[in-house]
Amino acid sequence: MTAEARTTLTFASAALEAAQALADRIDEHPAIDALAVTVNETDEVRALWNVVAYFPDEASAAAARDALGLAADIAAVPDVDWVRKSLEGLAPVAAGRFYLHGSHDRERRRGGGQSLEIDAGTAFGTGHHGTTAGCLLALDHILKRQSPQRIFDLGCGTGVLAIAAAQATRRPVLATDIDPEAVRVTLENARVNALRPLTRAQTAAGLHHPVIRRQAPYDLIFANILARPLAALAQGLSTLLAPGGHLILSGLTREQLRWIKACYLARGLTHSRTIFMGNWVALVMTRPERPGAKAKRPGSGPGRLQITSRAPGWELDA
Image (cartoon, rainbow, N blue to C red):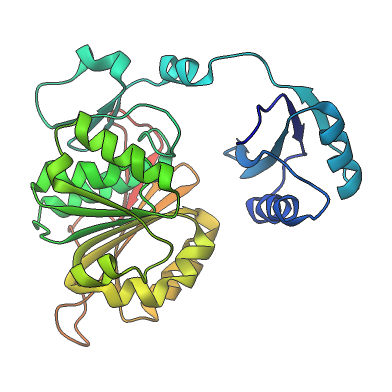
């Protein structure tokens, strides 16, 4: 932001696609110059989201509301240190072998497993969101059966998935993001966790950067972004995956699961696993080791089980 946000313009909650469309409309409107626009989940059960736009003053917010012709609430931004406040409210998260905590909970690190220190800050992803935790559970399951050698995290945010993979495998991991700040935060978090030598972060849009192509194909790819870009990148991501490799997709809701799954099935991948975290989904797709081969279904028990250890409401569809 080039100015301090002092006023918010909040629109009524709606379905995710409608909220995203409104956020795009605000971003692209020639008469509106918002400092930032966010889409926030307001009701997980009913899958409702709202849109909040930030402005330097009340007059700018009111002008934006008039330009859109939509009802919205105008409110002053409270004078709060949000980073400090968010740290206070973030308890450690356990996801399989992985245990994520902030610097304020460093003394609560557990003895076994893989402990990572990730603070809330200027990039997305602390492990508390269902999409990130679901990806970590998927990674934990894969590591019980395989040891990926070439790993790629697309849309890395704070780098939590790349860093977790580097710590667990002790292999170099490539992390990319369209936002240079996310790349900076990823490298800082890798340094804090003594994993900087194993973490390479690069600012890159999409999949065409030479560093991504040069290291392909990958045994493991994370893509924790959103449903629409996951659909658009289906061909590219599938091409980057090595035979026998796994693709962990997230940032999608239950309603979007069938759509995204079909996109990747159409590219020759097979469905390996689905993890539900409330309304959020982590989907694992696999490239068969031989053309036309079908992947084995993991496990021999029921197709879905309820995970109650430390995380009520998590479901697994094998």
